Amino acid sequence: MADFQSGLWWDYSRPTGLQGTISLPMTQGNIFLSFLTIIVAMSGASLWGIAAFLLHSFTVRNRRNKVEIFDIQQRVNLINSKSPMATIIDSLRIYMAWSKHGIPGLATRTVVIALPALLFWVGITAASIFTSKLLPAAIRVF
Image 1 (cartoon, rainbow, N blue to C red):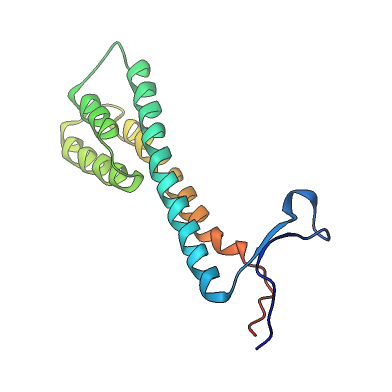
Image 2: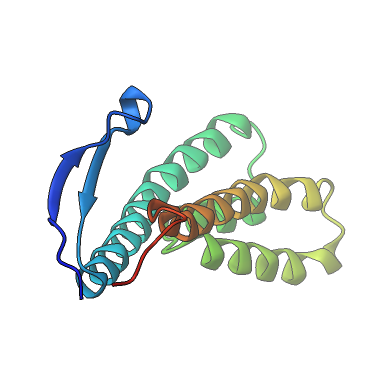
């Protein structure tokens, strides 16, 4: 087995912003990559709390004059949301419960809540998956 130097070093053949490089043995590299994936997922969950609050504020300001029980349920869904996917599922459940009552604009008001949550969930999932791109394409196992 060949020995190599592990640690932080600068690869001057790459562009300035991408020069920082860390070399780790394969087992430690896998642990580090798993750690980064967890950090991205946790930061995404924290950011969702802020995004849900901002979306809640938008819906409160947007429908200030005419508030229906459906709107209140959607706001409660946003303010108590634990994750983007839970918000999507709860929004669809609220929509299904109220769809029989013929409320105008029900689908649009549901999409205003569910679409940002879906986009946020897709973005965080993609960011978690793309942490694997931190590994270079040419990994040599010694």
